[in-house]
Length: 188
Length: 135
Picture 1 (cartoon, rainbow over the protein chains, first blue to last red):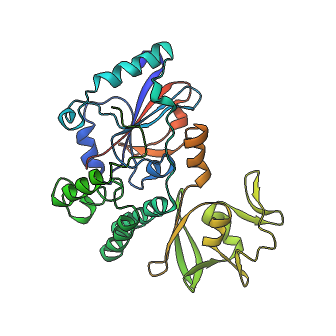
Picture 2 (picture 1 turned 180 degrees about the horizontal axis):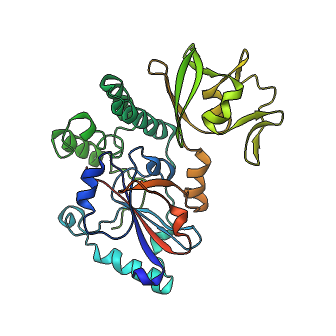
């Protein structure tokens, strides 16, 4: 659909560019790095993947939604990516948006904003070799937004923890017990 | 006096001091530090000005409290006096415009080759913005 005035812009909410390079192998659209989590602050993104449809005029045609680019997690989400691809095709060719495009996305709370700033500070201190300071601000961030994956899970690899290990499953359990709070559309 | 690091749109530094946990800098250094300058009409950036009354909310002696300045222009902050760092968040209004008025906030980030790219570089196209991660 690249010739139809449509493109993908991928943004990695990650610190290590080499890890992202591996994922982006063979991809021709822009892949950008957001180690300071600017996007999660300005678009109120609380987990990945999150997709936002933006039209020719820079208007959000469909806000934050949890949509996967492959069926790797279908068993977990109960949903395939084909539905989203069909919706995008209808939008690009006919300007038709799905009913959920009108969904209102809740703003971040002050604590959720502050958590993002603590995360940014922690990442900065970590780069400067101040591990103690980094740990303190990663902790402060997690305390303010304990169920936010871009705050808690994103910190795991930066704190020497596995983002697929025990800490992750503990987070996932707490998240699901709380009703899976996500700033965005979670398609049925 | 010490060096205060400001993590905003760019990483900036300013000479200043910490008093009771407040980051204080010279008024002359404000513009380079946070992009806003103090003028008779208020705090200004470009053609936008925010009234600050007599300025008592942002002044401490002959210095300016960076966190109070940020508060006046509705940008959130987190400070670490020990590390001498101020994190200056995006204006709350930017995110609120995205959520309420559906105006996609512009951003500039680097690609995998280190080149700067902005959302607005691709204006005129329908864009699928995909936030993903390795974690």
